[in-house]
Image (cartoon, rainbow, N blue to C red; front, side, top):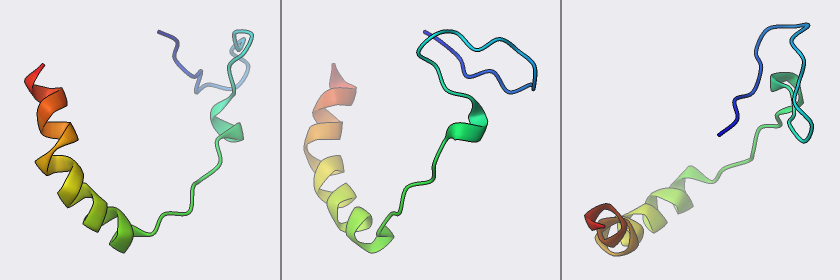
Length: 50
């Protein structure tokens, strides 16, 4: 597992990005809430039970 360096000047491993390169996603929280209900009743419940 790799971690994103937070301090300026820290060498970033090849293939990693810096915290300043992370872009925020647009999220429709209403739609997400609806889908989360379905997921928590099925897929997530099965995944957690593993």
